[in-house]
Image (cartoon, rainbow, N blue to C red; front, side, top):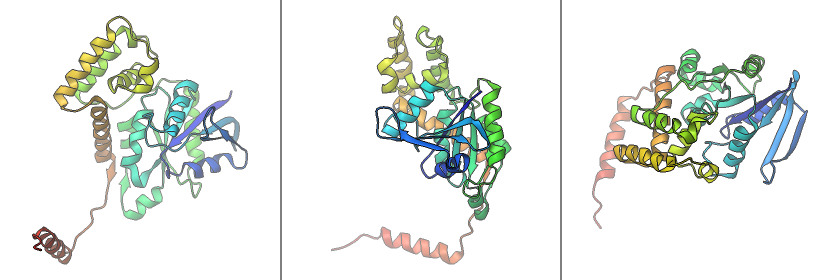
Length: 287
């Protein structure tokens, strides 16, 4: 049985290096249908039944760029067996934003925690078990450049694909946002969807790409709009920004639980120089 693995991550996360390490010279390069974005796919060197589809490097699944549209359409329409999410451990806060979105797709996710050598060189520590608990997915430490941890990573990827389990999202947003998502997911328009949570969140965000094709039943759209407006009023913000803020709250909680950063000691002379500089910059300028 063939397993389709979607390789996804931020630009500069080590995704291309990982793809080359997994597939070697057995690669196919073309373009995604209808666009000029490059499409790369190949078979895993150690198991030809495992196909790796290299998605464009993106920061989000919000459909604002062509690369985001291509990646999102593939994940939603082609439904790969598993997502291999490359995460730059040295810039983990930024990388996990995309991760929180992919975890809502109803597709198993395995995180390749890359560039751990940089993290250790800084003196920082990442508790992988705690991070797994916060995010609710498998995580394996790797070095794509040194080709370390790749076999262990792919064992987890294949196991996750073969399990056929529908993953549940481990994290939650604040109470009133969760309540709104729950109400939207229970409307007749959304309740029959396979991935109710993802759909409800996108409707809450007023995601244009989804709303272009989504069919609302009866008075659901009016009812849902009133639910969204109530939360926007209480947060004094638009719905898309509210979800963005909630994602960063989730990330902050995960980081506080699992990541220990070395404290940089500042000398007394550096403190004095900083105080003097700030006071000089604050002085009025007379012409």
